[in-house]
Image (tube, rainbow, N blue to C red; front, top):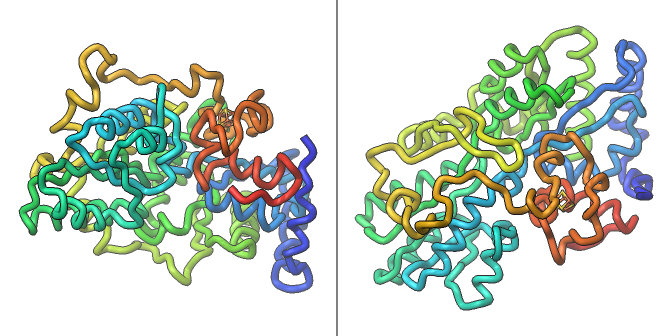
Length: 386
Ligand code: SF4
């Protein structure tokens, strides 16, 4: 597949700070005694900026930017999507969700398809909107699909606390939240994944702080750089990672100090800890990673849709508790894409049977998905509005 990324690199002003960083990156590359330097951008927003800006096109060939599993929708397993669809199909329910969940295919349907068929599925921009929907529909069970990393978990926690304070009896969340640092350690230790440094997500880091990554960096001996979302931020993080690799220092640096601190947002951490506790979580295509999930604490468990409506989410005979992935059965290789074991064009369905209009797997659906980024900036050689 012919990728025309040079067209995007015209946006980068190489005579300014970007040029100086590129010179430094090139010098460090020459000094590092490796044929290939694999850097993983964990976050899907970084992946899209890397393509959009043309960063990939201007880096020394020795550097390989690998995309990671930092798209919450992409790592949400089929079993969860099917459970959400089962809730939506029940006339006693209203399902609220962020928009990027709508088109993710489950085993035989999607929330969008069910919405078109009459299910009451409502897109919200904040979980808080679910409160008004619940008040306006007291005869319905209203379930928010709580999918996301640490960035959005505080909003789910506030929703639960508000429901408790307002004594709302018809509001629930269906939990599928995940945490990033433990997942990074799991990727670092994966026997098939070879990564030399991690470009870490700025928005997650606003909540958890830079220090949260230090145990993973120490345990894996792989450095990390917390990074903002402009191309200059990404170049800065690459320069930091190469410095740490060259100096053999598996540390975590903060290249986004204008918004990220060492300790993170204590108030947000506090509300998360009050409402949620750690649990194991299933990641699509990767499997169960211990300690990377969040479930409601016992005090708030009455708001858990998974507990209250287990028979609707997993009806008898549906293979309750199964871990399966229909997209994988269909030949989708999202799991390998999310671990960066392959690049999307290596999937036989990329840009053929699988495209943004008819996605086979979630990596093609989400605005943060890796396959969507490759399609948008590579498949047709032009910027395609998704
Ligand atoms: S191109 Fe489509 S089918 Fe292939 S891995 Fe990506 S989402 Fe899955």
